[in-house]
Image 1 (spheres, one colour):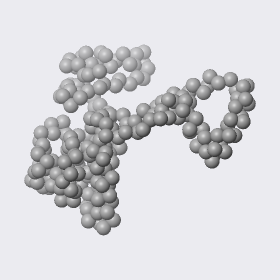
Image 2: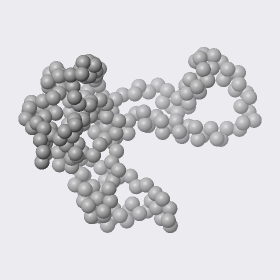
Image 3: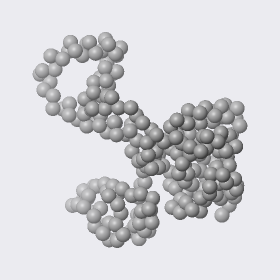
Image 4: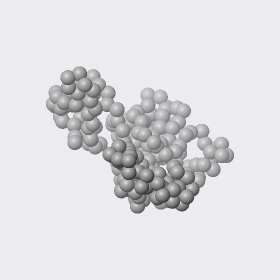
Length: 232
């Protein structure tokens, strides 16, 4: 549930996933405060972890649906004719077989009443959506990104932004926007994109890129405007 301080201990524990020549996967949960331990293991063991963000509600439901489909193998096919009339009713009600089947699987999985609340990829906090912004050149400080956002966004939108982190290659950043502001956020940048008034990419982050381990390098208060493009 968290990386050990001793690298040899980690290697021993993770080795239990793949014995006798078999493949295995070791998953380590860690928070921001554990990043130095992760970096130490990578450096001393000569490995590179594949880092992923917090699972999204969609990921959880898709995993549940795969489990539900596996359980269908237990159904005795000799009795399925008893459900043909009900199947015909569902297909007629929902318009096609695919939607009728999807609705049935949703009910079987137990997620049929769930509202898919947004969840941050960075922290897992509900009601926040992780956004990424990419530039074609490197910048020296995270305050540069704040300056770009404040140029186009209203104060209440920028006030809702949380947890900004710089890409490892210093050509972008990720941050969270509150769910109640995301529609206005999207509308503004879609309009700017149509008018070709922006020369960077911005949108919902689907998977976390490699981030700076020491984000204090570019940490600035939201009001900062310094730190434009630059080299090392």
